[in-house]
Image 1: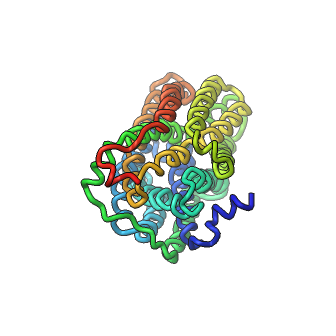
Image 2: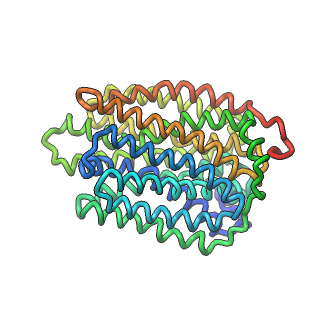
Image 3: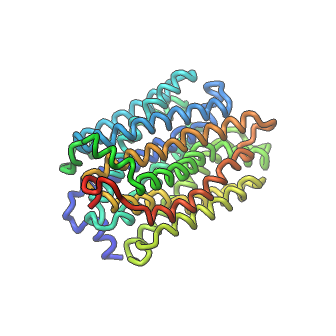
Length: 419
């Protein structure tokens, strides 16, 4: 354990503030991804919209993330992490503040559109730096898993705070408190040395990256996974409200909402546990590192079983258990995918390549949560549970693609993109 902790810290070779920037980046990303789901049960009546319209807001946010992911990857490789980091935290602060004061669908849509750029700036500095600043750049799988525990922390903080604040104060004030967190975190990249930069962006290199087999398969893996994760982040609270309201019809509405919001926090805590455990395993057992694709495959199979459980759940206890189990098995998938992909490429171009992979992944988040919202809105009882069946094929495809990723390589202009 001491050796693992020393590896995480890099034995003080890496400036601690640089590590702080990476961890703060993924923490902020978790907050961004949890934001809409955290306020969903309050935002829909506030804006007078149904599940379909709320799904549209999610799609707007995710489409903005898709475009911004490509831009931020290139921007980091051009100007470095510091400028993007400071800008990302400030943009996120402004967007949460704007959402707090928007009182119609148009205002909320603008906030979601801008939030995508803040979120992807934080995503790129976080996941761009993690394999460089943890474990001295020698264990990408462990670095992404342990670093992304802080994504889960951000995913936990947003609904946890909101669940309490909305019972004590107004919607505007609750989100203003939340907006103060990324504002304070701006200090970390502003003070960090952050000497890390990528190579100067070249369109030819980007073209070479796009056609690599490893890039294509990793992008498809993330398409499936991010669609699953974003669907849970944005629909778990309404799902929880459905189950709790049916089981406890006499429960006060604000108490039902708060309980459902905390279900997302449980999902986030379990995700942190899954990533931490997987990161420690990858740091301590080299044989697992060589076969980590099976971690993703196993997680996808269990996720399918959890979704089937949720579709039939009529008790809140079952819903809470499903939320926790889903978070635990989802936890290792994203960082382990990056751990499989990153070592295949020259580290100088990792930010650009990560932006490409993540952008394709976000397309899943643009499409699937919106489809779920449409299906729920059109059903007679407006049930989220019925729309969960859309997620089952993604689990099956994810299980197969994970194995393919381990055996996909880099070809073509290998001198430009590979080690």
